[in-house]
Length: 497
Image 1 (cartoon, one colour):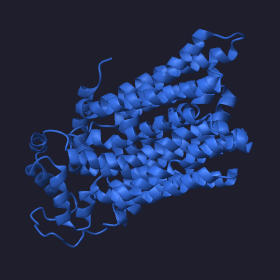
Image 2 (cartoon, one colour; image 1 turned 90 degrees about the horizontal axis):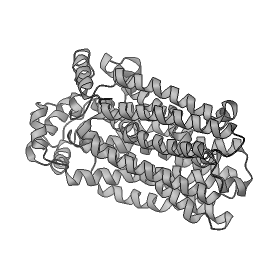
Image 3 (tube, rainbow, N blue to C red; image 1 turned 180 degrees about the vertical axis):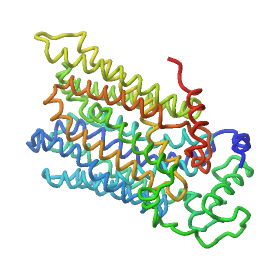
Image 4 (cartoon, rainbow, N blue to C red; image 1 turned 45 degrees about the vertical axis):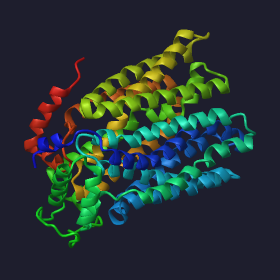
């Protein structure tokens, strides 16, 4: 297939495909809300339930431990049930978890609800980008696949606003309402997603060619584009490209059987490189400290000198607005600029911001009197870090793994990345308080700056550019022969300075 021909046929973003990706991204909004609202709710939970710092750390981190389990199960589940019903399953888990947290008469029930929601998080983080990538054309895939991450940013900001406006409610009611209200959109999504189409690529893997072709005609701008995509998907699935039957015998392993062996035990060189890239980008997304900033931003700002609870929550809302603004900007740039330039520029900015934050917090902590310049430096560095993170690392982390794996390996390959992501997230969430108590809060952010330097080197050498490439051509990009081409393309695309 000539990818240039497909590019000519694609004259803009298909509205139906965009609507499908937007609905799928609602699951990410719910997850983002839960993350954002918990950062403020913990202030009230600690006061109401009389829990200690260790219990607060466990409450923060347990969601990601359970998400790790959920993400590992999600790949096989989506291969078996389909992408659409996997989103329904994730919504139901969020619904149950939200009800339990909203009810929560004690810490044990609260933790159980958080765990249940965590399993739903694992499913949501894997399935939303994969579904969006599989219905998108190459020219709009970056934009549509980054919508789930934009949804997370929207949800986080919503959570921060809920913290601020519900803070004046009675203590026993306030935080429970903050956490329990997420049950409403979860129920709506579980019902609404049933009206959306299944992934055409998953349908082809099941031998349902007629259904897949009908959906491709709706998510493509022209019949010619739909036919090109349809032919390439059939070839990738091991089906004769000239086959015109509506239903055929599915290829082997259509429900995910044997995939783990191909991914982990006997991977081809191309798949091994894809897996390394996926694990690396997911690890560095959280090892560079974003979870510490987002989840513990009230505590960080308090260390910087912002003492009143209202001002803490309001400053945290500012963090959420910054995150959403730059995430929205990144969705407009990712298909125009490319993945590599955004990723490398983003990481460079993060290194500078984390160094500034570490210096500012160190000065505040060791000063005998209040240093307004150090307070302002810490605030500016916090917002700068969030801005640079969300302009590149945040969206590319979810777009990249969802688009590079071959069709048969895509869901479970992406699920491995999500498992690494959640595991790293959990490790940072649980260990951040003990780390900053051991090496000071400023030292913790100097550590994150050092990790960001390593991340930049990894991204530069191991992540080729995927902008505009059809999903069915990714394996060629990651082969030895395609590596030199991709490196050259990547060097040309690097930002100046």
